[in-house]
Image (tube, rainbow, N blue to C red; front, side, top):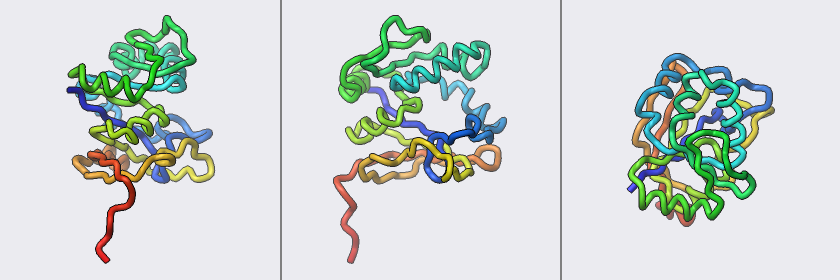
Length: 192
């Protein structure tokens, strides 16, 4: 059975991106980039929605020799969309038109290769809400983008308890936090 990880990079105030800021908020460093390029980070199938597919496949086409995109080009990818048409231009990409939650549930049961999301906030929200996510990982960048931030990561999620299983600091400033998520029906009863 495959495991599923939702994987986000975020600003300290919980945004996925910010208008006018460069990728990684301009704060990626050699230690973080080496970790991204490590072999263990490449052994999975990337899951994404149509918007992320369009963005990332465009970047990959513009920088085919970039080591980060070369690795992503060669790994298996699944995109969930009712608007994209086959054939897809990004190599090793499968298009799924049906219900993403049911498709991922099937993938988890019938494959051994780990699954990991790439961006795609609405897909991640659906998978978390359905209780399909085994790991929830954030890399927190030390910036606050309150005025320019876009795509709030946590909006629209149910209540979720997170049990920390790993943490690490990259380049003395980026914080990786990895959790096992448990979707809750509501706030836990407190001790009164």
